[in-house]
Image (cartoon, rainbow, N blue to C red; front, side, top):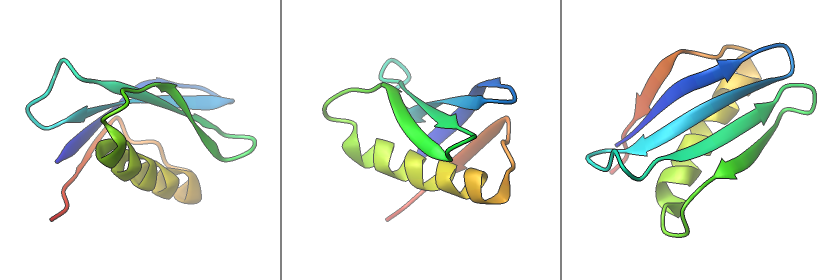
Length: 77
């Protein structure tokens, strides 16, 4: 499971923390550039690729819907 928390949202970008379940100390940060609809890495760890990929997938849905929730989570098996 990965949790996403909105840290900043304004007219130009939205910034999310993503936290793997049970690993509060290993947090990543991703940003959405609203004008270009690009998702950029701000702070990530080399071995968080699975969580990062899932977070990016969730965030792409936010971009497509133009909705930026305060919190979200996702699971996969």
